[in-house]
Length: 128
Image (cartoon, rainbow, N blue to C red):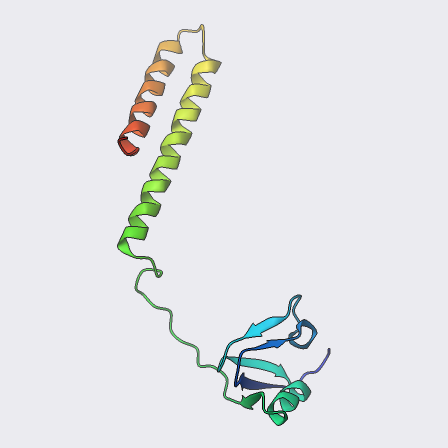
């Protein structure tokens, strides 16, 4: 649907706008009062039939600086998960290195690195 002129409308009830009207792959579900820009002919149609009313374009809001919408507990949990994943990767890398140097002079050093990585991982995991 190649129409250049569009209008902003807000639906008076929850509604579904067909995908080909909004130029998307799926139908778009609209909430009451949610502004949407539609092709002029479709916008005029839904306003005339009483499903929507013309409205102004939504005002752009400044991004919030509250920390990305995560609580302190969520941030701590994400950080702990990241540390645990890094420690698990360190254990995996140390184990792989140990296997690659088995039977050489570097084997003992690689074994100590693996033990240290396993201890770090164990310290990060909750006690059972």
